Length: 325
Image (cartoon, rainbow, N blue to C red; front, side, top):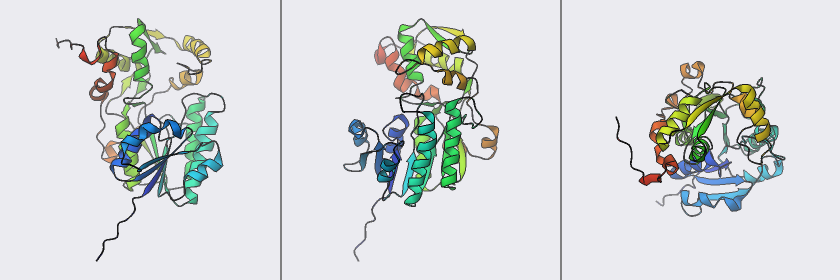
């Protein structure tokens, strides 16, 4: 009897061409899924093609702010993943348009084709926050759950990995600047989570191994202050720099000026976010709604940072490591 081969499931990954997206696409490709990646500039998404087999990954044009383009991107989908987010506003890219309207648009499009849904939010999402970023993140979560009540929602802490905009940015700054700023004294707590672990969690939700209708908080194995993150970074790139505390009032003034740049180093909204700790809650730990609860052993920054920050050492990967004392 002839065996009938089933066509692999189709997963539509909005924002799949970005930092987190490329790792999600890789994790899904390894599982054999067909992947469609809606993005604003599919002509710039060529870096995704080597992550899978020929024809397995298909970038298409779509913009979460343009509803008809979202609807056009989902026909035939078995599961939809929304990774689209912005760190600062610019032009028509507003927090409310991307995080709230965009999340609802993608969720409604997924519901229209009967697809499963996974949404990436952020730790610190709070509808009552003074930060526009944090407030619209939770409003986006609410929009998703109102539309698809069994959606899976992930809230990661600061995500690190080869293309991150946190450790790479400060490591780049350390190459030229004799000091690194510690906003608010550097006492804000983070729980940095490896992008590969976040991607694995998303892939497991697509596999159907994660209960829907809940919010999962994703953090790494260690809670570190901003200052401790900078100290770890300097240890990895083997540079000595002064860590200078910057009081909140001065940080706001700096952010007012830097925020005017096309790609600002710091904005007033980001300063506001830094006033709150960014760690997994006790409630999530008790309910097993964490990486460990999902059966994923989180990677530490001590393990991963050296694999991509070596390029910021004075002699790059060929720099002789200092012997341990």
